[in-house]
Image 1 (cartoon, one colour):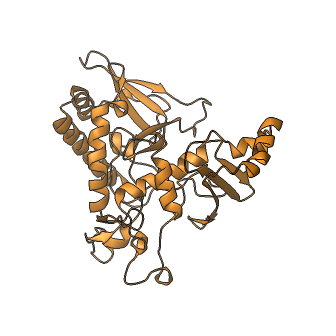
Image 2: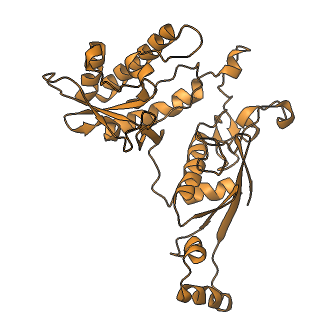
Length: 331
């Protein structure tokens, strides 16, 4: 019921494009399509601190572990973007960084081929002949980088958004993860299951990539609503998020709707370790949060009188708490 209401709410909000999520990007790299100028690194950070990760922008997103090679189109760190190895990591990080960079370049070539966008080819050409002296003095391989060609930031270009929208769920449904690699199984679920939210037949998403963020004491990368990583949580041979089969569209819609509610000061209130999110089924102009934080006598009077006027409003309220990487809540 809760996730159905969130999916319904998503239809009223302008949510991020498919496969996009808020990503901290420290550097925008300006490139010249005529190759007459060296790359110019433009910082988006405001504090100047070394660990300032920069401005949060909507950008192509992929969930990955420290060992999974999964490139994020035009919005990745120095390991993927330039093949620079991260320090202090176990194993042959130089070799791993090289593989990450190869995967990144392959993704750019695929994007260039399918979009026929000349700016994509410009980025690919620059990276394939990259010179170490182009890096700024405060270059940090852990930060994220994106590109601007002739004044246009590529992650904002419509055809690139469309390309990523097509590839994101294809990649997600086909990729293997660490849990699967141990037993040689793929994370691809069998088709023909029914989405428990919309009821349509689908290939359910085994591990939901979009997490719920901004929960008090929650993980920085967000917390999962549907997840099972212990035998005690599974049933009927279903594991991970397959315990509640969900299609890709509903997975993205419910998560992005919840995050939109958590980011809007008019639709959430945090109280200690709990955060309450609330919304109405239809747009009413009523702000429950403002009524509590900035009460206006006229609004309070309207609320009291509404009990006698019989106006019906479908009001949803959820209490959410972070519990070991997951969301615990009451609807």
